[in-house]
Length: 181
Image (cartoon, rainbow, N blue to C red; front, side, top):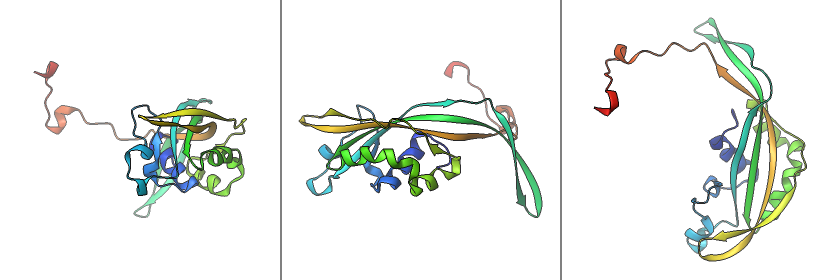
C-alpha cells in the first residue's frame, strides 16, 4: 500500500484475508450484496465491507528529499510529508465473518500486514479491536448477523512539491467557455 485510500485499502484487505477483490466492497447502503445477486455456486462464503472513516494529519508537514539516478544523473525530488492516522471500519458477512473480525487484533504482529504497509511507512496502531455483531438486512432476503470492527493505521503521507507548473489553457490550444455557452 503506497497511500491509505479507499482503492488501496480494498487491495490490502483482499490480500490479507485472501478474498477475491470482487468480494471486498465499499461500505455503502446502495452497493450490491454478493450473497443476494450471484448464482448459488458463485456466492462467497464471506465478504467484507470497508470504509475509511477519517484520514487525519497528526503532525505538521516536513520536507523530505529523495534522489533518483536518471541517465547517470542524480535527480532530486522534494516532498512534503506528514504522519496521518486512518480510522477504518470493517463489516464481515458470511460463515467466517466472526473469525475474520476477531483476527484484526493480531494485525500489529502479522508479518504479511507489516510487509503490505511498508511502502507507506504504515503500522497498525494498538487499539481495543472491539468486535460487535449487528443485523445485516439483505434486500428482501432474511437478515444475517454481521461482525464489525475498527482499526487504525498510522502512516506517512508524501506529496511531491517540485512538479512542473501546469500550463494555462491558452498555451495548449484550448478555449474557455463561460457558463457553458
